[in-house]
Image (tube, rainbow, N blue to C red; front, top):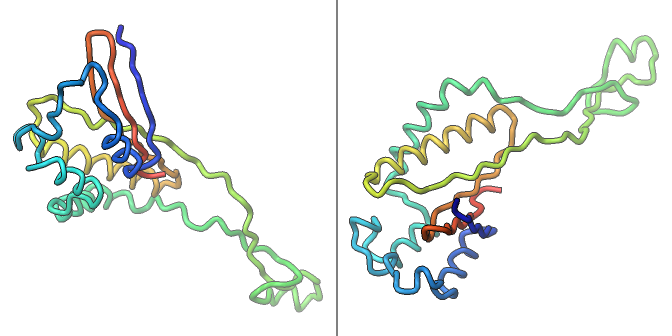
Length: 184
């Protein structure tokens, strides 16, 4: 059984700062495939391009992602839970309750009570890893499906925290799995 080491990063900026400052560990001391790997392995022409995509997003696929997302979530628009404010009769308010005023009741105005509500939440950790034979489209499709699932979950009134993890290094006995928060 392998021992798994995880380290959580609050955001992408902190992850990038640590990646640039921390030296490779003993397992990865001579590995620099992020910098010297070719396009077929990294999907970018340089490490700097990968960092830019990480910071600003991969805009080339936005049209495809939006159309797929619209198709998947279209049938689930009915899940919106609506407002949590409750109208109540009160002695002060924003609109009169005419029947109550006619009978002389002191609570003849309608006001909205905003009561604190506990929010249902779910935390998702998505592993962005795939087999070395997977094409780029595989990762785009799975990311789009994840985004659609998050939209559907949030339309049903559940707040989602999303973190992504990736396998960084592996030996026969150990595995490193950094996790970075994407949506809190």
